[in-house]
Length: 233
Image 1: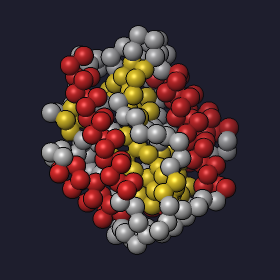
Image 2 (image 1 turned 135 degrees about the vertical axis):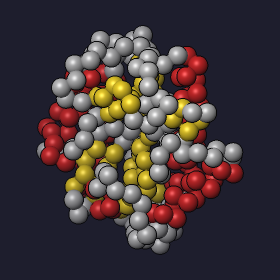
Image 3 (image 1 turned 90 degrees about the vertical axis):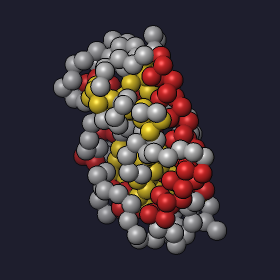
């Protein structure tokens, strides 16, 4: 679990990121009223297998509505309903190197509060990702995202660290969190994944893993983070 990745390792993680983007596409297309979260997971993993992608980096997560308010939960057998936020968290294992990304989409129409928590989470994720550069500390990066969510009134619902390292495992160093004064440097790889989880209501998480460059960072996944509205048929 090296803190710095070689160009070859980063290339393998970029390929894994492309596979995660494909998985999102399959998953979004599988959303239908009456389908269960577990059925959508099965569609994602079967679709990847048909492309020769045989290993996930961790158990694929699809959570709809209030189920997504548990960031340590998983897909269940209850059926997808319209007018919910649906959270996807997934990644693949590409020749021993992992991807990990999260997107949250709208199925049908959203309430003002559903839309607000999405917009706040997105603002926090984009601000933190834009702030990555050599010399910033892990704690400073966590604070950038956390301050945005706190200022919007949802600080108590962001209940985990901003990010974790990634490489040959899906959780390694560095840890992007309060109290970690490690200065980030080129070729470090980690996630940026703020979340807002309101019990009994909804959960939003938006995540890309990135590698630090000489003057910023580059994401491994490129699925749009603009709110994706999936129509109800």
